[in-house]
Image (cartoon, rainbow, N blue to C red; front, side, top):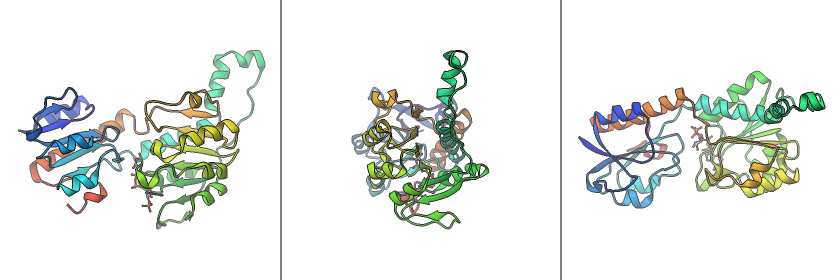
Length: 309
Ligand code: A2R
């Protein structure tokens, strides 16, 4: 049996399948046989700490549960011949649903109106104030990749005009903006769904949020690092930015109190892909990659940087 290091949790189904092929060691608590470890199972949040990777001389493969892998130093892994896999596609529809749900919750003031009923305001004060329609909006997608396209597809029935920004234009009919601030100026809602990491760090900055404006809505289902959180809180407090629907934060699970106090935000605890069905599919692919690598030395879904390995 090969030796696998488990970082973070695995589901019972994953553990059962893994136990048939691997001796499982947990990072937690230490005491694992570093020299024997050939495979790592981790998730997008925990990644693989640099000192852990460095301490595993015979590591051959890292399987990441999640599509985002910014917590793994892929260049360092690749330089050592370690292949890294992730779980693209199986979560596209779910993360897209989360983005659309956040957008709708902001527009239709779902939390405020739910509280209106629970608090007795309806009886005491009468009808709740009107909200904004989600129909016929212009939505800018920051990162029109697999998930971004799924978001565009889910918004189509609402008569949405989709535009997008990424580093290079894609082969799609939507209008492309080479400049993010310019796009923010032209849209009602900006939805962030790029990878995290240095190239997207705080690219949604004060200028972008000011361009989005007092009637604008910011949705983030990518990584907390993509948005300048302090600038966003200030913009929401000042009314320079209208609303924000957020599934991700800079220092999860810490969410600044100033943000938690705002009424023009909807906050989720990073559950973009967090349904029973989608997490099962992600778990299955995470294990499929490990088992195929063990048996055949190949993988199903390498991260793009490892596609040529
Ligand atoms: O920039 P391009 O042309 O490579 O397009 C990609 C875009 N993107 C960026 N856009 C603007 N500035 C950047 N620095 C930048 N880096 C990447 O993000 C592409 O359109 C999109 C990513 O699409 P996919 O690789 O298909 O990723 P997927 O599966 O949609 O997932 C996106 C992210 C994950 O990495 C997680 O962090 C998160 O969703 O859950």
